[in-house]
Image (tube, rainbow, N blue to C red; front, side, top):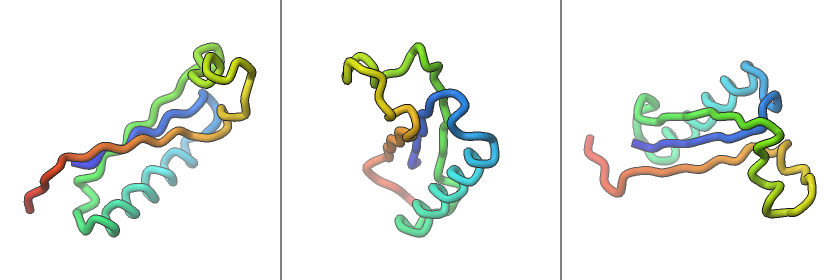
Length: 80
């Protein structure tokens, strides 16, 4: 089961952008891995600016908040 997690600062993506991103990532993975779209799972999560995970690493307010962070995981084996 492929799992994609998209993390953004609250308010960066509106509902339409989230839906479009989920559809496009799902379609990409389905076509690339030749698996049904129903196997692909997308999790969208937001954080508040006060909890910006980039701030402690950079030491300054970075523009990273404008860029979604996408992580992916999958099982090693699949069956059809």
